Image (cartoon, rainbow, N blue to C red; front, side, top):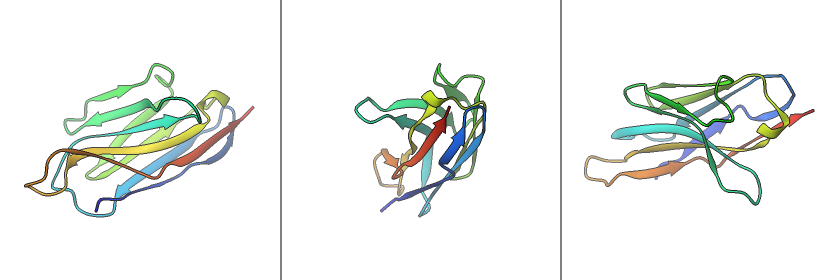
Length: 119
C-alpha cells in the first residue's frame, strides 16, 4: 500500500513562508506526475501546483508567483512565500503513477497537513 507522508505545515503570520514536503512510503514503479492540492472545510479541493516527470509545472491562479513546486525522485516539495490568510487550508500531496509494472495508474494521496496563516 502506498502512503504519502507530508510535513512542514503549521501556523505562520501573513507574509511568512512555509515549505511542505511529501515522500512516498514505498518505491513506486512509475510516476506520471506529482502535485499539491488544498481544501477548506466545506469547499472543493483545488490545485495548488503540479509538476510532471519532465519538470513542467502548473500553478493555481491564486498562488502564481508566490509558490514553487519541485521534486526529487519520489519526493515533492512546495515552497510557499508571501502567505495570506486565504491560503489557510489543509494541503494534500498527490502522486499519480503505477505502484508496480502491472498496476494500473492510480492517484495516491497524503493524509493532509494543516496550514494556517494569521493576519
